[in-house]
Every structure is written in C-alpha cells, then in structure tokens.
Length: 445
Image (cartoon, rainbow, N blue to C red; front, side, top):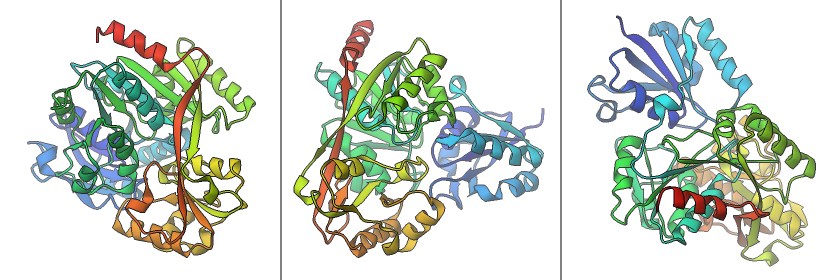
C-alpha cells in the first residue's frame, strides 16, 4: 500500500506530540509538512531530523498555516491532521473546509492514539479555555499532595518556541534553569510558580522521553501531575482527570475544541472565579456540566486575589498588564489585574493602545477586542523589548502586574509596580482535599 502524505496543522505543541506518538515510526504515512498558527515566529523552520526519527533524515519543514491550501496541492497531500487547541468549532470546521476544498481528508487524533501510559499515578489538570485557572488549580493539587509527604513531578504542556533539538527534554528546578533554557515570558509564567513553591517541572518536545525522566527524577516521584496548556487534553493517560471551567465565558465549554473533550472526560469539574462572575453565568456553566457529564464531581471555587502593595492602586491611574495568551486567543476581557484594580479603587484603567510599539502594535491589530489592557507578550527578545517600551511610554501613575511572574525581574519598568497573586479557594464541603484523599487511598500512596 502506498504511504499517505500527511500535513499536521499545529502551533508547536500538540502537533509535534501527535507526530511523535502516532506518525514518527509509522510506515503507512509520510508527514510532508507541519503548518504553524497562533504563536508568532514559529513557522519557516524545521522539525529536526534528530527528533523526527529514521524515516525523516532531512527533518520536516514547518510552513505558515496561510499556505495550507497550496501545500496540499503542491505536495499531493492525502490527509491533514488538526492539532492545536483553544479554538471555536467554527474555526475548526473552517479549516476543514479549506482542507476538503483542496482535495484532502480532515482528521482529528484522539486520546487512544496519543496518550502515553505512565508507571506512576497520573493526575491531569486541564481546562475548557485558556485562562480558566488551570495553573492555580495545578498548584493547589501539588500543595495538597506535598502536604501528605508525596513527591510530585509536574509535566507542562509544551511551548517549544526555541531550538527544538535543545528542548527535547527540559527540567526546571530553579530560576536559573529558566535562563539556561532561554525561556520566553509565556514559558516563565507557567514554570516559575512551580519552581518558587519547591517542586520540579518538566517540559519540552518529546513527551515519552520526558515521562521516562520524570518517573525517575533524582528528587523522587510518587505522582505525575499533567499541567495542561490552552484547553488541550492530556498527553498522559490520567488516573484522575480534573477540568477547570470559567463562568466569565459561559457556554464556551460546549463550543471550543478540545475544551468540550476535557469536560466530557472529567472526573472532577471545577467552576472557578465564582466570586467575580454573575450568578446566572455560574448556573449556566453548572447546567452544561450536568448535561454532558452528569457523573462528574462538581467543585466551586473562588480565584482568591492578593496584592503586594494596594497603595499603588487606590486612587491611581493604572496600567494593567495581564497574561498574554489569556487576552489574545483566550478572548478574555479581564484578568486578575483588572479585578484587583476594581476592588481596590483605581481611579482609571489607562488604555495602552496609543503607546504601543512594534509587535505589540501588531498584536492589538490582530486581536481588536482586548480593550484597555496590556497583554504580556514575550515570545521572543523583540516582543520583550516592545513590552518594556510600551509600558514605559504609557502615561499612567503605576503598573499592576497581573501575570504569574515578576516582570520587573526581566524588564525595566520606570513606574511604581505591584504584583497581583491569585490562588484557588474552594467553596463548600466538596473540595480537592476530599478528592485527593480518595486518590491516595486508591493508589496506596
């Protein structure tokens, strides 16, 4: 039988994982290209030969998704595999229409073909949208397990924006490791909160190799925690699946891919941010959980906000800097920084758009509905410089840093700043302590 020519449509994450687990050593297929979207400056490079395996001695080219139709025709492509996350169903099927119109089949790979089984118990923490509160949930799970004297190793959904060969397996145990691996702001936002709490986190490109090292981590490993990204489903087969939902975007849990997959597969569904969402929105999300996954245990939680220096906010004209992906493809209109500004009596949220430069100006052109907030975009050195210049250009009294990292550690800000921290705080008798105690007993930990 002739090999099928395949294009994997991705964003430097799920696409590489699907290749590694399903296509890399599969003689029935020939992956002729990846396409790239969502993340800037990740196209026009190669998936390297040393990661691609014996069937691909030249590596595999990565093209912009805009060229998908001509790639299908020029390379005689038989099927295209959609492999990125946090996209609405209309977008997914729009890409399907492009693929079918060019003559190829459209495909989605599921958990059975892509999840890797660990020899350690696995807890997955996923979400229905970017910015739902997955990371704070992961931190809470880890803290509760560590309180039981268990060694937890976190593995983060990939963000391989640099040299892919060097990023095959990455281990982060100190802030120095962030420099060693030349992490972007987006990577630091996910890794730093784990490091500062004293637990190990892995990431990279080859998640089978990562799992083998995580299971044998030199600091010990009793439990693997999958810390999901975007709203992707887990790369590892979970023994306990937790999914976080966001009542600020009610209904999205049933209209985004693959967020609904996470909801339907959840053992535990956490409705987060109930303290800043309307009662009606919380009720709609709860109703949707019960509709599609009536067996899921529902936990309600607040996203508890603390501020280092409230005086920098009260009565001041503030610039709020929030997590980048949450505002861009996550489509959120507010974050923890805005909530803190509102609660602590800021005089004004200053609109940064008149002051943006470079790539940040481009970001606001692409994502027109961000509003009077500044996304902490830092996928590369130039974006980081543009972020610094934009903040320093902005006519405001002070800056609220609503990202999970201390931006002043990596850029110079010429105004008073204060950080906003947010943690998961369950409401009611049903909580993660109860869930994890059962998990510990079941797995004899």
